[in-house]
Length: 208
Length: 415
Image 1 (cartoon, rainbow over the protein chains, first blue to last red):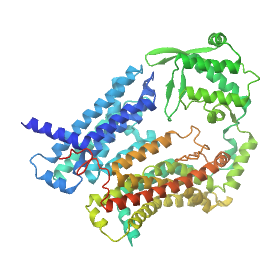
Image 2 (image 1 turned 90 degrees about the vertical axis):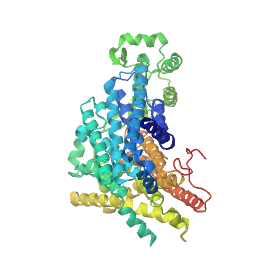
Image 3 (image 1 turned 180 degrees about the horizontal axis):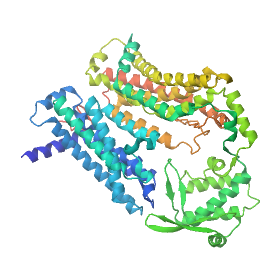
Image 4 (image 1 turned 30 degrees about the vertical axis):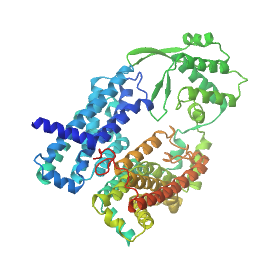
């Protein structure tokens, strides 16, 4: 019964609120090969479209988790329900993460099909960059209660990686393009910290 | 007064604070180091600067060698959207390239193939296969080939490759005729810096080059947040019912956005100009020159990005405005020329000139620069007028915007 109600929540959320984000993310992934070569790339060359373009879908998919309840009246209705709000957000987060993994997987497999040297570490590295961009947006949108600020924070981080480059240290987003994979575990750890802080903030401070 | 109210609201907003941080960060991390020490004549004369000579005698043989090498390897490196693209031609297109090489060199198909054995060959591990690449030098160039015909052929080659190749006519001089600057040329360049740029104009260009990247995108967040604030605060209907005209309201908001977003840029400019005045106190740098060039360069960026943010947010949503401007910004940035100086086109939105020197290259495109700055400023005003129109329609209940979610959303199934 509980599972059935969860499935209904997920279905309704996807249908009414998130399908457009999934479509935009899919559009980014499927149009990328039109603009950038996926054929016969070595590992570093393959990392370029993956880190610079494909990782952006993390921002598209994870930032708007709180968007449907930006309107205070909707939030009042949500508060009156038995299911905890942060639990609904967690379901959305898991769904978006699954879509993210599938779309990045499609890109990597297509590269492989085009005879490029892509490995599982390129897939996981891209996923960690995308998750961090999304987690920053998720955190900023959750704390500031404004999805625009979420997008801004996420793209802010993306932009400073272009300008500060290696000065970003272990949190450098485009390290695979330089041939380094060490940074990726730090990106994942930072993402987990940001997501946990956001849920902690929602549950303990905002009491949603 | 409405303008002051909107400015106060903006100055207290989180989006404006993040915007300011981003502007200051760009200024501090990218530009400030340039002001570490003054550029003196000795340093300028000892640097190894190159320039495009544009000499057909250099361009034609170098481009032909490069094209023949790529043809033999059937691997052409292109950057059609600023990103690496490895192009491998099919046999029909390869034959077209071969015909052009034959026309330029007089070598038959077999003679071109024979070059493979006469030149350096090395193996590249690419993807899952290893393939040979060739470095062909001294391919003979027929004496009766005119430069005009050569450029025409290179244009065709570039088209066959899908654009963004080394052979695109406007990039031929930069790619194949780089020569070291002579002492006289370096001296002339330094004199231009002192006498024509009055020092500060050169710094103003570099300052604008860096900040222009941020200002072509980040203002959209501040604009979108302001436009959607009424909806979020449930004040939309209340504002609609006020006596103030849509024209006055929308233009006041545009003016407030523009004025507040200028503030951090202006403060950075003041800091920079003050440091230049101090560093070059003996050389009498122009104080106003810095503000003139950076103002003309950056104001259209802020105006255009703000206008896009306002219009798209009013018609669709803040998210759509961010997406549209991001695509425009990313496309403009990626299509910048590899040289990062000089090449400014009639419709270049993000103008680049990442050098203190090379004034002559900038001035060669000065007409384009003036045209595109005025064009984008005018376009932004037209977009604000369109925003007034959309706002008036929404106010009159004739249009409710195109929304994706919630009541009236196009993805919401009607009952």
